[in-house]
Length: 403
Image 1: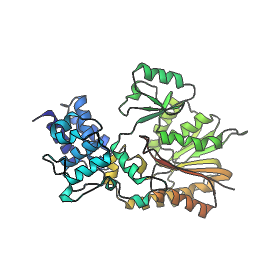
Image 2 (image 1 turned 120 degrees about the vertical axis):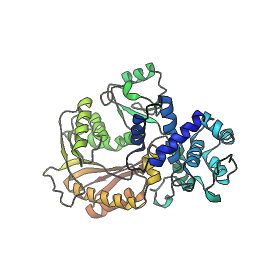
Image 3 (image 1 turned 90 degrees about the vertical axis):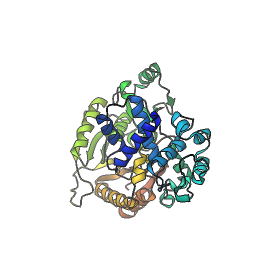
Image 4 (image 1 turned 180 degrees about the vertical axis):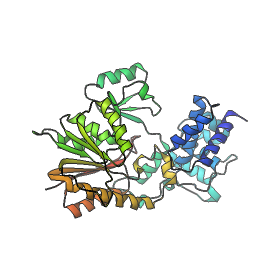
């Protein structure tokens, strides 16, 4: 058995045992921790094959595991590689074609060697990868979004104030191929071991380009004020938006909250590295019917709401594969409950900044309409931050004001 057949068989065993739930990255880490015979290159190749399996999303559901792996590898590859050369030589000859063309050839079976590429003779297209076109937020190109699942996103970092030159020098000295998106946003190869080169959270923050772009909506609301601004990051998570707000204006009066205390413990460690000392934090269940309003009102509330995460699925295609569309409605209801609990703590004249990393209309524009109708807030800005054509995540942001 060749090394590449061994890779395929190992990937098949991992995928047969994986049922979703935990991230695929965690399942792979657990598997390799007990199978120590694999070197770093082996682990990388096998992991890549597993991700290729899921990049087909909801398309070609009738293919068996090996067929999906090889089809996903073919569609995700831009150059010939050794696995395709050995296991699918006809595919390797056409690997540089556009994804749409490759999908068509696969569904027709015209490249088949020993692999039947069309499930039970039924043609499929790239558009089957993400079959919920009618659920998309306005302006998202369905075809372009489907295409993005066969492209590995970049790793993006945000350079913190005063650290721009030192970070760029460290990366250049390490021979990292970097791309300047803005003066403070860098795109790096996804496999970059950034934590071995840069002091994370102190010098730079790992933050997707679209997430960084939400700062364009936050910045005008917290600059050029004569008094200290009270800001509540109500679904703080890992704290990326809070650190960004602090970097825009270090004088803010910051409060962070999340549903689990463990999240806030991790956030405290990040804030220490980031030099953020004066802030308040508390754990709170914002989708509880028993939520009690605070006595504090805020000039700005940032609500980076829990969501399907559909705008990030090119990074985690296993979530696309296992996704149940009933989750869209569940998250939409959850988001409406959260905003209903937090908006009453917005000061008159204040700004409510609603953010998701979803591409579904029900989680985005429909929630904004709910806010306008129930709380009579005025919509100031709203935009889908399209990252699917930039090797980045896609997000949604809206700014509403209370008059």
